[in-house]
Length: 430
Image (cartoon, rainbow, N blue to C red; front, side):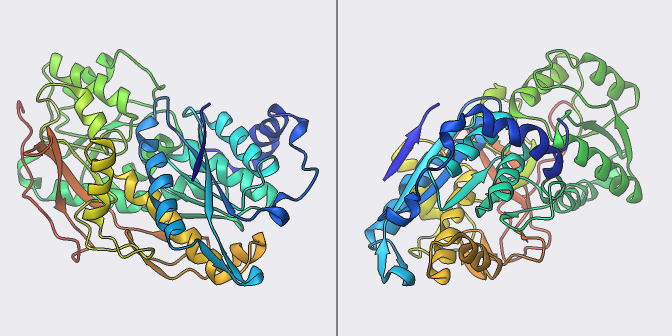
């Protein structure tokens, strides 16, 4: 059963707790001060799931409600989760809430889930704007949380963590993947890269690390500076790239900004030979929104795919079957957050089973000892509460079943996950 409630710069946990975190607790009211322990009287396990369901990063929360319903049904159809302390199985319930893509709203929601709803664990995913404030609030109130779909480097700015965990790729993995894809065609490139890095935690970290790594491998970076969400006129950046003879674009914008920029690039007659774009075009809906044939050949990251050769620890369902279940329910094409959202339930259930208790410290300690095979592959957290998951290179091409389909064109250090196509090069119009 699901209960749905509808509703920058790098954020360190210390700064957050003094500002957004404290304000978040106050903003939702003093009525949240707990008057009794619901955890002692409930006959079910309660999971909180804040997700960006509306706003500029809503594509990251597109699969949250489905994952809640699907995984919960799987778990409850088996009688729930066996808790040794109680000598019985407890069903799962989920409270999912819309963060509206707003870090302050996210902090308020996480605070409410902990203080008013008395959740046993929190799951969150969707860029540092979601996972950083959730992690900070959970650290403050000592509640375990599992986070994904945000790179480790911006997340670690809020550490060290005792209660928050992250399973996802790193900026280093992204950089390696993108530069390796550039290197495949280095002989046909002048190796000048234009940066598309917004004024957010991702943009700040990516810009700094990309400059160092790319220059070491013989690429020149043309950085036009950070820009705000919602910028409508990118002509100054495009004119700079033209002047500097940029033939590769690299960046981590949000979907609406990339769509606006890419259309303007074509309108102004600037089409690079390659464009490796993180975040903005991870999702079919975001690619469709660009319009026309403009997305053809755009390169991005693959963090989870229906073609991953892994199975669920809950039921043994394959990644392809999980994707088909989504399509059957929604009528829409599978999208990457699906596997990461679902894996959160795998990890939470595994930890609670091994803890044999709903005591938060015991669940936290069980998470630290995680060693589980999931739909994302094996997950085992390190001393910083982080696990690196697969990071592949993908390319959007015209599809047979769907208008645009994401093919794997680079498998780097994950040869067990096969490539599905050769890279299109160069982009049309270059």
